[in-house]
Image 1 (cartoon, each protein chain N blue to C red):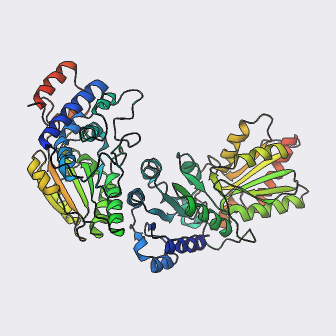
Image 2 (cartoon, rainbow over the protein chains, first blue to last red):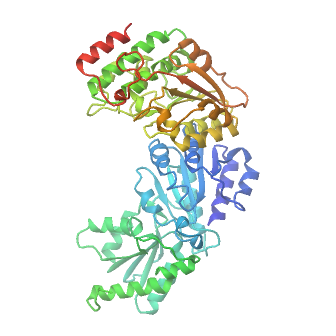
Length: 316
Length: 273
């Protein structure tokens, strides 16, 4: 995902000298191609995220199209007010890019778990929020961002995620992507790099006799409200899956829509608990520990379906 | 494009009178901070800045960033006097339904380059503007007015390091150094001294001027347009908080209090002299 982002950005920057990349001293092994092809469009701001974001605003107010880049929470939470007051309030053409969304940097510890970013970025007025599910979605989101600009937040996974989509696609801002739509009983919505695990969970559900359609949401803001409303009419139950706190992410966004629909479908939110994790482990280990691996996602959905049917006690 | 004919002394008097009336009518704060920087703004908008009130967004204008956004009344007054909008609108400052907020906001206010109000944001944005001016071969300059208390913010020094490293000669930081911040003096709060040495150590040229002396200010602030890469300039403007109104000068109280009817009359008489 990360490498695809840089490939798309470098290709665009070669053709458009207004594109500027600022990093806060992050990107070893990733930024080199951009730097060699577009040296005059690259700035390493050093370990100074507030300044990076202010610089980006200044450049954008004078016509540049800026991407700021760092890992985990550093380009977002560390300089949140610069994003709110400077980038967003001035509608500056800045896209804030974080690599390592969710638990991608799991073993580095709590400081590197980007697990509230979507909630916080989603709450800033005028800031588009994207969390693509694989490299193909990353290209599609980048194509839209390069065409229509910021203010935006782009949450990437890491590098080496499996490709879910077989071929390139184009996306409008806010568009979600149906991946499996065979008239299943469940609609499963996924955002970000957990998409592959979500699909595997859907396979397990199918083996258990529950047909689940899957839709990826690479955009959280704007959100594909129509797809959510449509699903509320057509499915018995909606499931959201995200590698993010249960507070404020995709599950919350979908809940906000469903809550205002009369007679809407029940919702099952699969997400991280609103607690810090001090466990040491890689992404796969922490996903398993927090119930975000395919088996746990599928088990959680099956259990909740039983609860909803009145066949199991809700207390656990 | 420049306003060589504008009397900066007259402009400063007008800014001070507007600020007093605005804070009185709107019952708003920071009259002392606004009076402190009135002469700096008068010299900038009276001649140093190449700006065009008829076309406030023209791309080759100099940029001015009021990083000490709490002195917004002074900036609004300078812009109105300079012809960016009708001075009669200043009466709406801080009032319900107005766009003239206590801290600087660009929405609906022609001539404002940047909304501020949270301290420590302006210098980074000024550095980004100056970097972009060089990248695109433009000659315009970016002036950033900082408060002295604002220099407690770490982000100011992040930007200071960056600007010196990149030799952003189009960037001018002006510190309104009145030595009073919110609860007391700068030295008893978080000592800034040796302040000039700090900026020099960060790689800046430093000029110390009397921030109420228009000749010193205009000579120092008029850095050449399109200068080759060099150290950025920091102007430490030694000022008096509440300058021009005897009973407001050097009093922390006037960081907060709007003038009463009687105080307004006396203050207006003083600043008209």
